[in-house]
Length: 221
Image 1 (cartoon, rainbow, N blue to C red):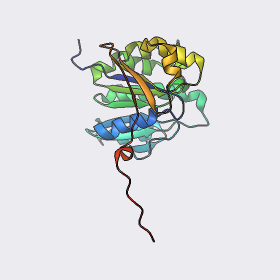
Image 2 (cartoon, one colour):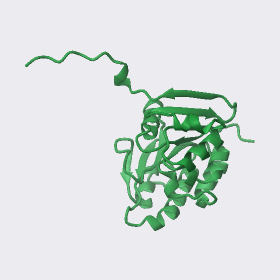
Image 3 (tube, one colour):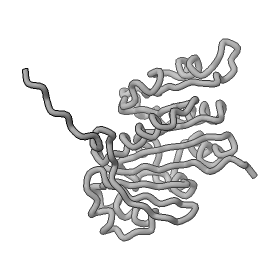
Image 4 (spheres, rainbow, N blue to C red):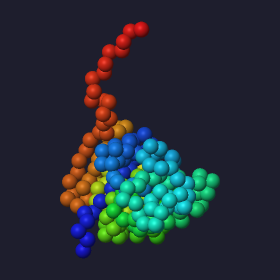
């Protein structure tokens, strides 16, 4: 049995619910030394080297001798003109994370590369065996009903913000074991989260540092 704690986090929510902002705050706070981001919408500029090919990714991750670097950070942007090949590229990307080990794997818009009852092999391997390789996995989606169920069944924490579609609301109500009306009532930046290991449910609103600072009076010209 692996001594590594399970660290698989699901962050769901419609556009504008704050899911990507919450992930970015987590990354800025923790500053993981080894970071891989699947970034189809190109949202993570500044969090790592932006790459568009496996060759470039390997160059960022590896030393000249071909060994994984002690520190690296990259955001992989799949070709928007080749969406049909995204699941295959995503599978390989997940296997890069497994190969490197001891790293944080962030996946944006998971529903674009998985289906409810089917997922790329590399992703399934990461969710099922990543704990043994020291992976922290954080995945987000606007459409939780379209995300593979194995991901939810292996998650250690699940959070949802506001959702637009009834099917997505039902999915998250079932995963979190809360009433669907609780999810329907969420306002922008509000969230419900469940620790899947303890069953504890927490609720809150995403805050930004500037919101807590008193505004300064503007100087007159």
